[in-house]
Image 1 (tube, rainbow, N blue to C red):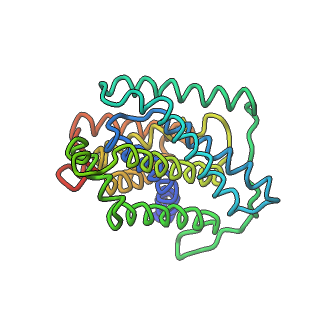
Image 2: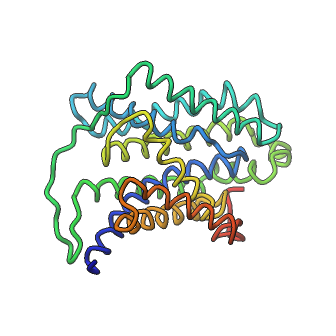
Length: 291
């Protein structure tokens, strides 16, 4: 097993990790502000993948239309569940919205399967030849996927740290009562947060659909690595979620020579267990959080 081979695996893992990071960021935003683990996040990613596929198909093959459709579709379903389910459970124990989110996940997947079936779908992207960057060979499409994911992460971080909306989100997450007394509308902030989390999830679905295939279980498969990345990077910490996503992606890819492609997702589960046992507060505990 050569160094170049391992380096290629690490680069592929970083590209896959950038998609996991998007899912982890959406999870940590909800956990940091709404304060419950959103188990439906994976299936919202799936909605984004299908919406993106439909948007590209309807536009005659435009990838930009697919990206916009995916983000809008996932943001819409995310906001709908907030308004009709999670908003009504605000103030209760985190167990209630957690169970509700599990139900929402099954509902979304069942609806997709019922109306669209189990057939796999693929985005219409041109086949490209891998290019050599030193010892690393990478497909240009993967570079575009990573660039898209990193650009989206940069936009979200700019929104959180450089805009009045970001400051209001942190204020509501830190102390909802004090934020309300200061004239901040918690409902508007929560609406914005669910829209952002949904749009980020939708983009993750589109990028994952381009890299692999679109199918009903794709978001569920991404949920475990995203949860592992969220816990690894400290729950509620956006920077930690992104770093955790990249680490999980690289770890999964480097494990493929030993456990095979099918079982690499188990590495995410192993990392999750190790972090919970050794450092349950995560790698970035004590650093600035959303809340």
